[in-house]
Length: 193
Image (cartoon, rainbow, N blue to C red; front, side):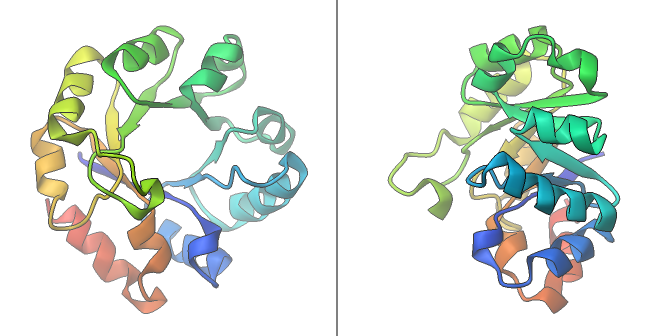
């Protein structure tokens, strides 16, 4: 099944806690990507998210995840490489990758999935050219673990992401900025493909 995942950015909304709870209620996993925070501040937000949401994947802060007893972590490829034993402490380990070589490296280090991007132009990566669908297809062909696309994914281009071989898509801006009352409709528009 093609999977939709929410990646957070609390700076894009004023109703963060309510928003991620509502997204989670629609059976959408949440990658809590608030890596601009100190680990202590991140842990506070993570503690609340874990209480409110059914499926939360913590991001970057390995120590906070361990302290909170969360068994799912998502890491930049560099952080995964710097922590080769991390797989022992978590049931699920994901990695952000930017090339087929990095995807193979992440898989070799025990990653259960990779997030590849950015695929389309996005405000989150202003000024950086998107890597595109050919890049996504290359990453998908290079590994056996699920590959989730990220970057500029919208209802009007998600079908092409699926055709490129991705197992799903990670969505940030659309989830963080749509009106709260339209979250269910937005999720349906992504899932129709």
